Length: 458
Image (cartoon, rainbow, N blue to C red; front, top):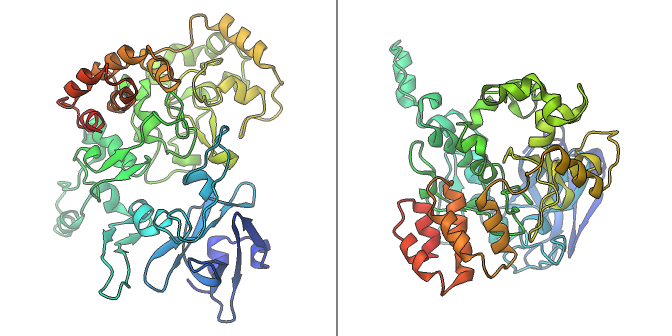
C-alpha cells in the first residue's frame, strides 16, 4: 500500500509514533520507513527481528488486522491486532488458536516453528482468510523454487458475484436490453439456500472444496464447527468464541420454525442502520410477523417498565455475548430465551445477568441485581422455563460427562425435525458412549443427511 496507509485504513496515532505492542513470547512495533512504506517489526520464523511491509488490512468497525506478504509469496497475518472500540492492541493467538486452561482464558505460548506462530500455516491469509475476505479466490501452487503467490482473486472484499454467482449473462442481457434476469434472485431461492449464501462465510468451519456455489449443499463445501466444544459454544448453541452467526442461527427456532433468514433482517446491499439492519431493532419491528401479541403488549411479557431497555425484544432475546476473551461482543443469533441458572460444562452469560451485572456492551445505568434475586424473578415471571428443548438438555448432559446421556443423544440424532447441526452434534458426542451406542452410530452412517453421516463416520 502507499504512504497514505495510515490515513486510509486507520492506524492510530500512538502506533504511528512507534509504540511497542507486547504479546507473549515476542512484541510488534508498527512504523513507516524512509520510503513511506508502512511496516510491522517483529520476530520472524528465524527467531530474529525483521521489518515486514504491511500489504493488506481486514476488518473495520470491531477488529482490524494487518497482513504482510513474505518474500516467498506467502501472505501472513501479523501477530498484533487492533480493537477499534477500545483503541487497544492484543495478540490474536490466544483467541483463535488454542487458548485453554480451566477458565478458558489461558493464552498459549507459541514460538517460531509452531503451526500457530504468526508465520505458520494457521495464520496463513491465503488458506484461512482469503476465501471470505476476497471474492473469486483461486488457490495457486508455489513455483518450482517454492516462491510465488498462494492465491489470486477477482476482487478485494465482497463483490456482486460473491453472492449472486457469475455475472456475464447478466451483463450481456442488459446490453441487449432484455428484462429477464439471468442472475439468481436470492428471495426466490428456498430458505436453506438463501441462508447458505451468507453462512458460507459467516460460519466457523473447515473449508472442504472452495469456492461455494450458490444452490449447492453448503456442507459439501464446509465442515462446520458443531456444538460439542466448550471453547466454542455452550450447549444451547450460544457463541463462547468467534464462531460467527451461522451455527447459532441454525439452532434458532425462529429459523427452523419461523422461516427467518439473514436477509429478513439485514440488507446485504447496505443500510443506514448498524449491522446493515433493514430497520432499527427497537420496537420489535422484526418480531411482528410471528409475535404480534408480544409486540402489541411487551410489558405483560417482559415484566419490565414501559419504555425501558428491558422492554425491548432484542434486550432479552438477542443480547450481546462476550467472546474473544473479552475483546469482542456479538448479538445472540440463537434468538432464544435467557435461560438463567443453567448448569453445563460452560455456559454463556444469560441476558438477565448480562444486563444487571455489567456485561460487555450492556446498557448503562442498569440497577445491579444479584444472581439469586434474578433467578427468583425469572422463575416467578416465567414459570416452567429453563431448557425449552430436549436436544439442549441432552447435549448439556453429554458434554458434562453424564454416563446416562447416551440414549437421549440417540433420540436427538434420529429426530429429523432437529436441525442438521443439532443432529450432527449428537452423533459426534455419541463417541463418548461407545460401545453401548455403536449400533446407533452405525445406523447413522446411512442417514439421509450428509452432515449426520459425516460425523457418525468420524
